[in-house]
Every structure is written in C-alpha cells, then in structure tokens.
Length: 583
Image 1 (cartoon, rainbow, N blue to C red):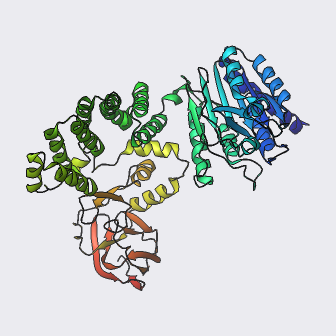
Image 2 (image 1 turned 90 degrees about the horizontal axis):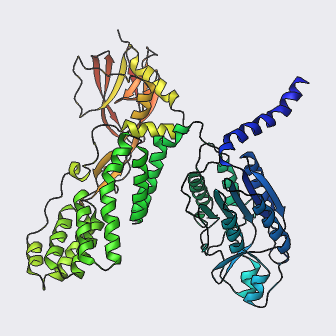
Image 3 (image 1 turned 180 degrees about the horizontal axis):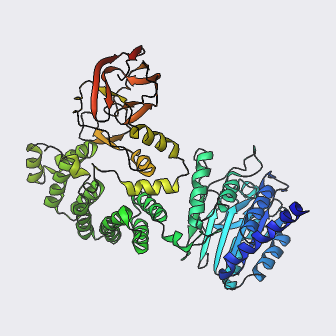
C-alpha cells in the first residue's frame, strides 16, 4: 500500500510544482489540432503529432484542448473555445498538424471535410483562414501568442487549384507573437512515412521537455535536428516579435538568464548573422550580450564587435539611400576596426567607384593587395588593371608589385596565440554533456607519480636538462580545459592561413602521415609512457602507433634523465623495444 500511494502522489506533486513555477505569468492555454482523414491525400502522422504535442504541453503546465480530424465547423468551434479561455496575463499556443495551403498569399488550414474546389474563392470558403485566428488573438490580447504549424505538406487544395505549395509568410500577426513553420515559407515538408511522428513534431516535443531552454533556443535546436535528419531538405522556419523570453520549463534559478553560456549562444547567432551580412540583426545580438554584462572574454569580444557592426549596419542604410560616398566612408571605418574585413574593403571600393572617386578606390585596392587572401588579391589585381587606363595611380600600384603579407600575429591581433582561452573552455565544458573526468584523472595520476617515466620524443628535439621536469596540472578542470588545442599553419605556397587538427599534414593539401608501431616491454610494469605531455600508456608492456620517423626514448625519474636511446619507426612496421630496470 505504501508503494502504491507514492505512485499516485507523485503526479500531484509535479503538477503543484509546475503550477507554482508558472503562477506569476497567468494561465498557459493550448489548442492542438491533428488532421489525418482527408478524402484526398490522407496523412498518417498528423493525429499522432497532435497527441505527442498534447502530452508535451500538458507536462509543461498548459491547459490543452485537443481536437482530431476536425471538419471546418469543428475547427472554428475549437478556436472560439480556445480564445474564450484567454486573458491578458496568459500564454496562448496554437499547434496544427495536417494539410495547409497558401492562396493568394494568405494561409489556410485544410479541414478533413474539404472537397475539390472549382475556383479559388470556393477553395478559400472550404478552408479555415489563419488570419481569423491571428485576428482573434489580437482581440483577446494574451501576454504572448505562439503559433506552430506542421502544415507545410503537399496538399489537395494546391493540387485541385494548381496553387503554390507550402505556406506564405504571415502578414497580420499581432504584437508579442512567435510563429513557427515546420519548413520554410513556400517549401513542402515530409510526413515521415517511416515513423509515427513528423520529424518536426518529434524534435519539438523533445526540446520542449528540456529544462532551461528559452523559446528561441527550443526552435534553434529543432531547426538543427530536423535539418540534419532530412539532409537539409527540410529546415524549420520561425519569426518573432516577442520582447521577453519564454520558457516551457524555466531555469532552476533566475541567475541562469545571465549565464555566460547564454551570452555565447547570442554571440554565435551574431556571427551567423554577420556571415550572412545581416548587420542590423548581428548588432542587436551583440547589444543583447553587452546589456547582460556576462564578463570574461565573451563580453570583451562583444565590446570589440560593437563599433564594427554599427559601421557596417549604417553603411548598409546609406547604400540603400544611394549615398555611395558616405557608405564607402563607413565601410572604411569598419576596415580600420578590422583591417582584414576584405568584404568591407571591396564594398568601399565599389562605393567610391560609384561616386567617381577613383584615387580613393585605388588606395583601398592597394590595401587589399597587402592584407588580402590569394583570391582577393587576384580580384584586386583585375580591378586595378581595368582602372589603369583611366587612373594613372592604378598603373603605378601594379608596377610596384605585391608586398609581403603581414605576420599572423597581426592578422589575428584580437587573439592571444600563446595562451589557452580557459574562459571559453569553461563555457564549453559547462554546456557540453561529456564526462572528461576519467581522462583528466588518468593524466593527472600519470604525471604526478614519482616513478620513472618513458618519454618518446622526436630525434630533432634536444634532450631535457637534468633539472627539467614535467609540471603536473593543478586540477582535473585544468587538464580538461587544456585538451582544447588550436594550431595555425601556412596553407601551402599561398598567402592564406588555415586551422588544422594536431597530427594532420603541414597544410590542407599535405598527404596524411604514414604510421608504424612501437611495442615497449620492460621489467618495471608501473612505468607510464608519454609522447610529449600526452600519456600513451600507464604501464608496460605497451603498444602505440607513431608517425614514421626517428625518435628518442628517454627514461626520466623526477627531473633527471636516466637514459636515452634512438628509435626509428617505419611505415606499417612493428618495432619491439625492451626497457631495462630503473636500477
């Protein structure tokens, strides 16, 4: 009886906790609709999707209205019931899985009693207008509205009237509204015939259950997962004018909103927007980071980015107003902040050419020839040759030849190339569910023990002095953070640089190294084997893989070199070495 009571009491406790967590924001009310049974093009998973979403939202504290296989009149009645339950402090969520269509740039949901229409007007009359739902939400004015449509499948209305598939971008959403589609406007999503649920709804239900994720982050993760599962054939889409974050399950404490991992996500979004040249949006994310004041390297990076993004954003506005000289000057301002922003340099060149300021254009092309990559240098050369007949300075610049590129320390002037970014490593380890403690313990243990160690070193490296020793890390966290390593190398015979993983070839076109094997045996089984500062084995005997080449095997005790022996590793060969006793 005691066990049975605890099973029945647990849901009540959970519901009480959820109610307490959401008490300060009004009710959460959701209308969930799933339509499968169409006379034309029936679906398999839409009702399953609605049931899955109903469970996920009830777990998140929503009062749900679930409707399956709705006719047009039943759908209208359900919407009316939904709107009547909403007040000014409430959160409204509408989820629909089924067929949907755009007709003359307006979105319609297809009820299961839809029959083939003979005209566009008739098709509209036989469907449910999304505009009616959005207008109803605007009239009742909930605190926020979330509209989720897994309704971008191919559909009978489009086929009967030769209409465009997919959904149109919403035209009449009210304030404080978040709208999400299972794929982009005008695109068609899959019903996932191999599974019980659509790719989109399955991912969304999983992400809703994750604690501490704001609504934007939920859909960012859904977008990533669906895109991956469908090989980018389906990429969910969303648009929002919410002014405050919303959580299905709030963070465990209020300070989580100021967590540096959240700021890092904003910076990642800013970088993505910057790569797409969406300067205003990138600027907004950076300002969001600075407003939160997360501290550390993430705030310093945001502070450095702010004036650059302001200049690029304002330059865009000037270009749109056909103020080309002013736009070019702002691009030059951005170039002074980031001397290697070559796209800003080329845009400034174009602005000066449109303003008939040829000397300024030539001056910037010369700057690109000094600081540019191989591809941008070739582009600048071609432009200078085209300008030479009209501008003598362009010919003189060409005759002067190409200067040596600046050192890599100048290229990456905002980065410390010699010290690990432990702040970034902390954020990564906080947000990544990977247990590195076992490796850290092994490395700490191996480096800290007083017994002799075997060091395998390149033969070109000098032997350590008698007083030299390996300093063990101070903590497991230090070891884990030090595992993150970046190497910057020349990219072949070009002016470019590349980032590669340790152990790769000298450049992106280098062949992979050939490997051989070394088998170490010895009477002292507790002797660990290190390759540089990397633990290859904790005791003898040991077998390890090494790139072909010449090495030295050094027996170390504390800071003392006991012995040193040469070793040559051949590709695809095994070399056996017997290590004598430490005595």
